[in-house]
Image (tube, rainbow, N blue to C red):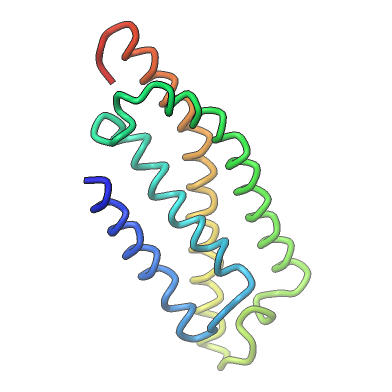
Length: 146
């Protein structure tokens, strides 16, 4: 089941990033964009579908993940801040180059909205995941459920 979810995550990431990649090619925040999409989908899945994942009964791994979430949160915030700072200083034209005006506006709006959606979603999911994992650890110790 975990493998299927990773395949769906990769397909979603490719579908979201491909429109920008086909027109612009490599852009400075391509890796960050991929990380945001994968982190958002994966962390959200662990929050809502934890009893059906490989983490369900692995207490030690859940405890380790609780502490790993803190550097992940800071990394995601730093990458979002880098993107926003780049846009503030250079504008979308620095990423998109010379495109016809309509295409530049629509692609710029898509890229900005998509990056913000997945970045903020990944940050929120990374903040919520330690609480969900802690709840799962408590439930497993006290009730025997996940």
